[in-house]
Image (cartoon, rainbow, N blue to C red; front, side):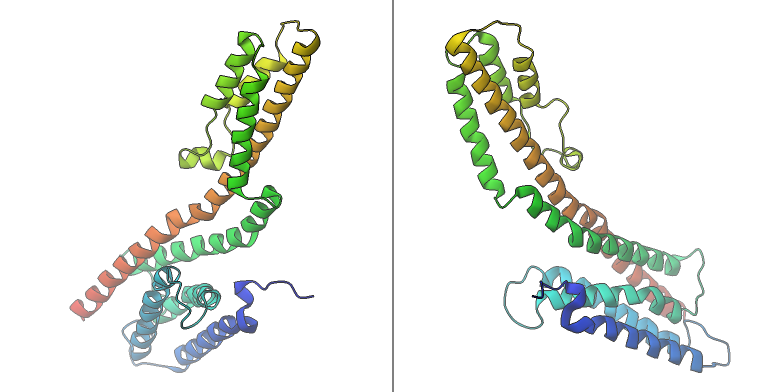
Length: 278
């Protein structure tokens, strides 16, 4: 039985082949050309490869809009993503061919450096999307996040009942668990996946360290309460791991998207400077 294929394998690596053909053709043109003034970004080959690279960058930016379109028209999203990865990576060589590998401290090199940043964060994103979704599925253990949250709400209700007729220490522990347990929060808190000051953890520690000597039914009720809070702590930690993993899915975009727009801005300046001074 053949499992689901990655977007990298889309249509038998169609866009990997397209990218390789594109690069081989560009390298052949670059090597064959022998302009009078030497190879440079100002030669006909340089202008041609530069125009191709610029159009590719603008086209690859379109994926951000395509991802938000749910209409079943054109190439499937998996195909767009595959093209985005392979064609985007090919720019690492295509752009140097365009400028004949001439770099310096200028806006032209800045545009290339920003583009390299976009590609680097994109590669990280590919790795994240290859690994994290599987980890999320494994962490949830065939359930949903909403179901986990509902189970916590049920445990909180059971804890209130279990704490009835017990000393104030137990009731305070339940209140601490309910009111001082935080999930999510800032990006740093989400990525940490833990909360050292977690109300549920402190409540469980308080209950287990209680020096109140209960007997009979009260002791059984106390043990039940401790078991409930311990189960809640496991669920809270499970949800925090889920939030952390989903945060990782979005973290690379925090760098990737701004770098992509910065690259386009630098590209526009590059094009303006080239044509203004030539």
